[in-house]
Amino acid sequence: MQDNHDRKWPGEPASPKGRVWQDPTRAVHGGPRPCDQRGLINPPVDRASTIIYDSVEAYMDRHQGLYDEVIYGLYGTRTTFALAEAVSELEGGCNTVITSSGTSAIALALTAFVAGGDHLLVADCVYGPTRKFLTDVLARFGVEVEYFRPDIGAEIAGLCRSNTRLIYMETPGSQTFDMIDVPAITAIARSRGILTALDNTWATPLFFKPLAHGVDISLASATKYLSGHSDCLLGTMTAASDAVYRQLKDAAARWGNCASPDNCYLVHRGIRTLDARLERHQRTAATLIEWFAQQPEVVAVRYPAHPADPGHAIWKRDFTGASGLFGVQLDGLTPPETSSFFNEFSLFQLGSSWGGFESLAVPAWPAPIRDFPNGEADGALIRIHAGLEAPQDLIADLAAAFARVRALRGRGQAS
Ligand SMILES: *Cc1c(COP(=O)(O)O)cnc(C)c1O
Image (cartoon, rainbow, N blue to C red):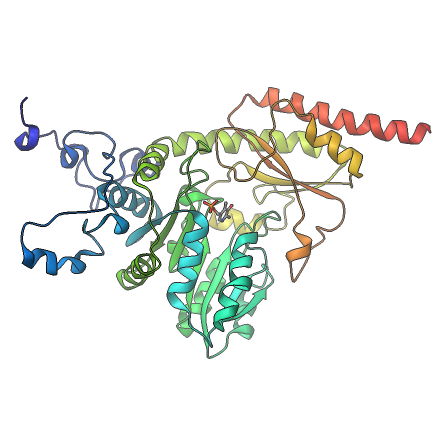
């Protein structure tokens, strides 16, 4: 067999460093060039625990390579670093740490920078498990967590203390889709030397660039849109500076967090079609929302791209698109109406997570965990993920669900 090690592979697309591509091109070509991975278009899957060294000197020095070399499987193989490079290019970041899940990325980013006695400011609309981590874990280590209203803007200055270490955001917020004025908050954080982190899972770096808006750490559950196929879990932490990257990488190493190379490969492959998928998710979401808005049972739609949404102005100013996840507030469903609505769909499925190719519909109950409920207790909040199916088929499925609820209500009035 011919040994291909010395073969010269075609070098284009050109050097990834400093290239001036648009995001769709970056998604398609992001990461190492084919010529740097023996002609392969996507990175090879390198599975490893042990990595061997050719001298005792190199072995003794190996830990200096933690941040950018393959030194031990736990800290990443070529497959991991390739994905980190592709994500960094999209986020416009200095470097990225890939973690085992979105939840682990959040937990690691929070623990990397805080210590007992520190004060943490957290947006009230964060993902439920983020809140559980803060309450169940960080609080036990003596970190003081204070939640702020998502619409606080520059008034966050009034909550900052001398021991405030980090401001943590997520926008649009989980379940209620609240928009946060990110530049107003990062301006104050920077002037006081407070770090900021933001969960960018909903928008992906194609529709929002946290680092360009002053955020220090952009976090994502790559399980959602980056993967796009509902079959793997991964998280990303992208840093604005090398110092922040190193601290994140140290945290992942010390906690023993490992991203599976197979999942890194799947997510890298998913990123190739991210732009095309998101365009379709966005278009279908707009079609479904237009339909929902015409149903008399619909009290409100929660989607910042919708002109009636309270966060629309901020979304329009800072974001370049909207993904396929939104909330629909109904006028209230009785338990039998809820069962009939959700249990008999033919296409929409009931399940956690989102961002895959398939449509989902789940009930949401954010009020019990919020410090500042904003009306979500009235009526029934439904979270919809607009998948890649034909919009007409999705609308037929939704129309049947509304018809079932109307039939139950008609029967109630008749008796
Ligand atoms: C799903 C989700 C996460 C957690 O991601 P996993 O990969 O499932 O751990 C974090 N943040 C947001 C906004 C999410 O929707």
